[in-house]
Length: 149
Image (cartoon, rainbow, N blue to C red; front, top):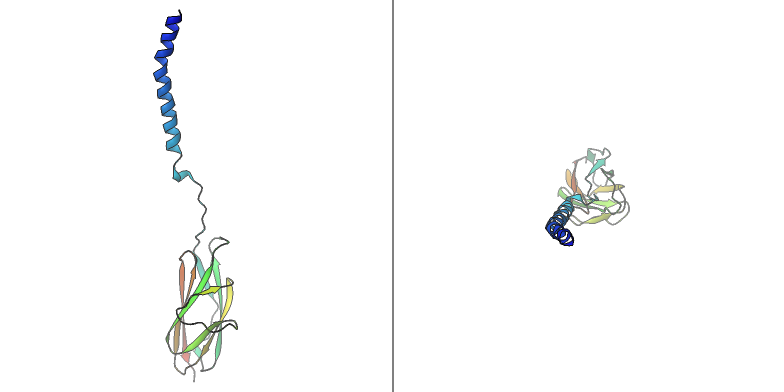
């Protein structure tokens, strides 16, 4: 009787090994990267601008109120500003900070802020302001002022 029992045990051994291999393979297949929890930190944004005058005189300063509106909230997002003036001459600055240099990148301290543009020429003026975030999202805002001299 012992030999029959030992023979039955030996006959079941390959089945147990096969079951163990199948169980391990199903477990490993179900643990792929698609099941990992993803934390989204890249949120697009919009830039809202309050209306500004259409006309400007040489030496006149125009206030430009801007608000960055996020579609989501990731606390480590940073925002930057750069501008490029392609018609006329003037200076753009953040509150009472020194004027921005064209095409240089500046860190924005807040998501709601005011820029001040001062005309230094008697011709029409045009410039673009680019707002970008630390994830490569970018928005372009164009401004045009007619000469009022």
